Image 1 (cartoon, one colour):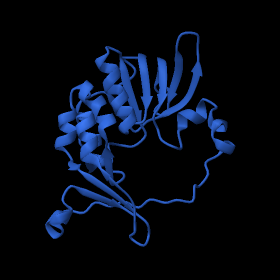
Image 2 (tube, one colour; image 1 turned 180 degrees about the vertical axis):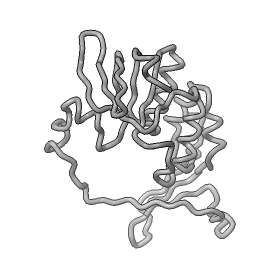
Image 3 (cartoon, one colour; image 1 turned 90 degrees about the horizontal axis):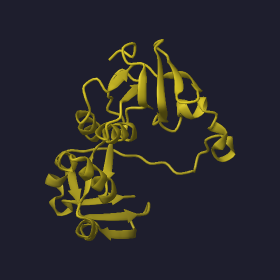
Length: 211
C-alpha cells in the first residue's frame, strides 16, 4: 500500500512478528485504521518451534481463528524438563491444563503461526521494506517519517520490533533497560524441528522434552 493516499492512521505498528500481527488483528476488528511497517522484505521463516499455551489460544479464540492455529500444529500432552545428565527436573501433565482452560498446548513452527496471523489481515495491512526513521509527538498525533520517505500521522505508534527495538530507541526509552543496555543472562537456548520423530519413537507421541 502507499501511505501517500492514507496519511492519517489510528495505529501504526512497527514489526510484523507475532505481537505486531496479533495487535493489528485485534485493533482492526475494533474498527480502527491500522497499518504495520516491517523492515524485512517479506514474512521470513525466522526461528524454529514455538508453543501456544492455553492463555494465548484463548485470545485467538476471541478473535475467531483459534482452530486455525490448532490445525497448523501438534498438541503436547506432557512436558518433561531434564538437566544435562538427563535427570528429570519436572514433569507436567499438560492435558490437565487443557481440561481446566479448554485448549491444548500446541507446538508449531513459528513461521506457520506467523502465516496464520497474516492471513487474518487485509492484503494491504503490512508494508514491507521500510521502518520508522523519525518520530515526534504532537498534540493529537505522532508525526512519523519512514525510511522510504513516506510521512504519516498516527494517534498511536507501537514498537513491536523486538529486543533491539528502533521505536524504543527513537522514543528515548533505551535507558529504561537494566543498566541502560542489554545483558547476557548466561543461558542459551537451541531449538530445531524434525519430521517423523513419532515414527521412530511412537511412545513419545504428544510428549515434549527440554534439556
